[in-house]
Image 1 (cartoon, rainbow, N blue to C red):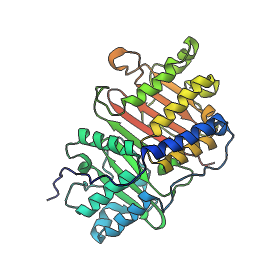
Image 2 (cartoon, rainbow, N blue to C red):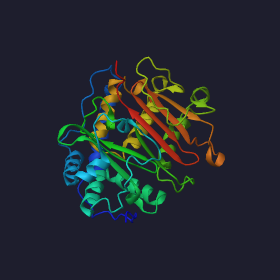
Image 3 (cartoon, helix red, strand yellow):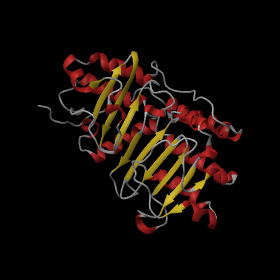
Length: 331
């Protein structure tokens, strides 16, 4: 009883395609070139709703749960567990591969994952899960906060190297409904599914002159899970994107597009709207860290993008742990 089993995903179902994501970020690029990402704060707009694909599937999943199941994995919306994030944790005890869940519920959960990610992201998350846990997706855990379809609610998926959320914008002015975590246990950069993000970030570093590089490169990073939103009065390390040339700032923008690409277009839209609210691209600072330089190749494996409304801490050594927090700090 309750033995984990290999979770087999269903045949490809409709979701956010890579082409759709390209349309979103292309629009963001055009807006940025016109100054939209660097304008002064205004309320964040674009966001998922309770009628979005993932949220609709969450409601379907919730309605399949028995009273006994709800007692185990469902909580009030304001429960403290909803606010937690970690690179390795079980938000509830049952695993998706256990007989706690029906086959229909497992398929719906996989559909929620598909609906909260892009085609690219869905594939990457499954590759990471399978590598980090022999049972793959079946080794992970879910929880539901609030009642989907009736007021505020949030769905969470957690496990090895993962905290993922969907909330239909129940948490206002907070992209993704709260902090996210992703990662991969492969220590070899060539085998890590997220090393390409470090390579993209390091294109920014490669563009810096000697004085800029000295400002951007620090010896040791802060704790990886320290990603509070600081607001306009925050103190940020590294080099200001606002001090970069247009070409260098464009590389930072490209990095943002790349790291957001695994997620659904609605969450990407909201993340960009929140960034704009917090002061835009020029409000960000970018920092690289000497510690953890895998292969001693000066491709800095630990880096951080941070501003008043945006924190993305990428720890790529000894393997990837990335912590994300994008939102407007309450006044």
